[in-house]
Image (cartoon, rainbow, N blue to C red; front, side):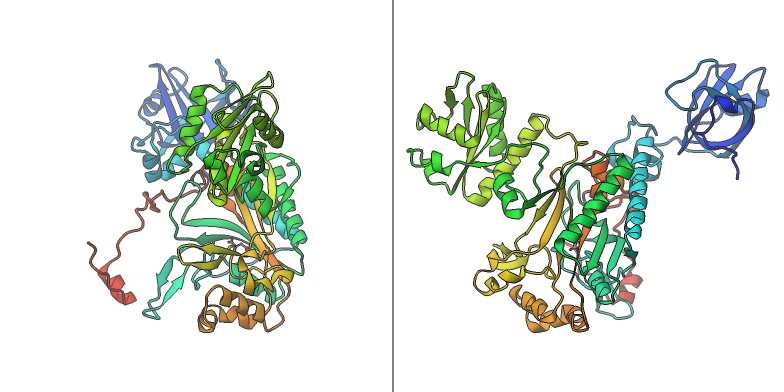
Length: 584
Ligand code: ASP
């Protein structure tokens, strides 16, 4: 090794040792007769000292000539510092340098490599390899590393076998667009990159592997958001001979283990909630249950009192914000503006202040007596001092709007502590989802999800009413994982494809291999996949998954460092038998 120690290792007890360190120059302080160099590696920072009288003059001069991010190899004696620095673990010592080698000089970096940096996002992404030198960024990847190791060891201890599945495959429908790769050998044909290894893991169950996992890259060509990347990592799992309960228990176990290993946190109860309750009480299939403010349906008490807007509404729904009766006109106007924003689209917001003296003040006093408003308050469980906020309209839209308002109130009232983790299983999702655009039912999870056996009969008469043994793990309003019990016989799978609008031929062409496999002794099975990047960012207390990926893409799906995607040469296109249409 070129070094005897790392830059984070030496303490006072090491005084008088001769050591050699290698690292990057964090900072040079030149006080004429004295030069200090902070040498950094991923383990820490150690101060080098060059002192006229004690250090040979040419070494002092050499030290004066180094700049930020030079790579040095320094040999010297560990000595106690005059002025100690209690902010860093090596702060009691410094190295009296006796030999210095510049292993490699560095251009002046385009931004300051420190926790507080002057580099904007785009610049730091272009020089991501430099950004990764910053403690803050590296620590996020360290957290990811610990979580990867903890996942592997936990699942392996539970008899899960890690199996790799291919990346050049054929479409697996997870509801997104595929990335495709043209085949040179088979001109005119394409591979698809896996949106997930769904069909392969099911085939592994047919092979009798019974407990599979893989930490695997998946690819979905979707519009990007802060918590989405075109390629992302899943902890993908499948189990045979299990009930839904077994899967929930196993992955509650994994989640608890990760919290313990990576954050030393014992998380509380994993609440189980029906999908329908989640929608009714929170207007979302991923409710944030760090705070209350459950929805209260007010149709019964708010309709037929002459207020047209409510009378015509399918749903009148409120939330009760405790202790907010004192909200000012300005605060209430800001809430109204919030729900009126085009992204939310409510026409207006009704409020009721439950005053401390037991009286009520509302924005609809014209239509409702004090007694009427008391009925609302009773229904909403509101006490004196509370504020009720009410929206109305058709059920789905109003729930969505109220969900946004509730989450916004969570922000306003600072109820969303990122380090307070509240896990939740959302259960019994509908099997199918109506799509207005295509006027068809789609699989809500994916086409391999099993309908609840006693509801299969409804598929012909009332498909929207059929539920699935499908579940999501939600933590703090974020979908962390999802899975289901699968179909494992050919007939049911064929029937499912039919309901999803596949002809027999299309189903055979796309998924014949799976349906064939089901005829050779497929065991009952089910599984789940966790979005690993999201899990990491949540553990790190951040909203952005990008920070937890070593080389992420930006919101236009570009890697600005390697400049990808990029055009390819004409010869390469010819090899692939591709002809590009001229772009406008
Ligand atoms: N393949 C599914 C997904 O990627 C997860 C599963 O059903 O196991 O969401």
